[in-house]
Length: 120
Image 1: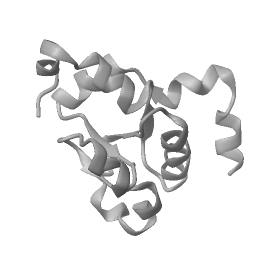
Image 2 (image 1 turned 45 degrees about the horizontal axis):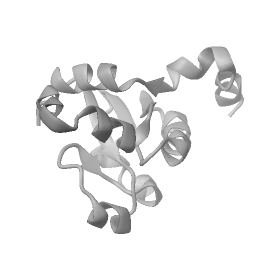
Image 3 (image 1 turned 90 degrees about the vertical axis):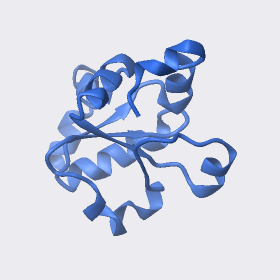
Image 4 (image 1 turned 60 degrees about the vertical axis):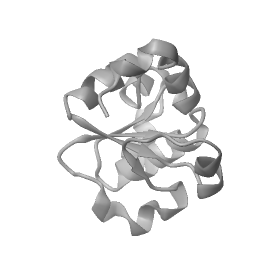
């Protein structure tokens, strides 16, 4: 836990999050795994049809579904819950970042003809 506390300083924040364009580049190269941590009620309203859907509260029971050899990118609508999930997964030994701008930012950047930027 002390190691995690040392990471929580402004200069280290860039190590905790990934910008949307960098995420898309890594995802297209299959160098990261995307994890949508929203609860089922949220995913029923609107879906993201790629990556893994593992609600944050199910992460402890579903760690075996996450690859240990890739960067994990967690996302929720904005970034609050995904940053908490990122912290927990980091303690579990995963290389993990949260998506800066969240799912809302990702969807905004992919609207219209730009959706073809990501390879599903």
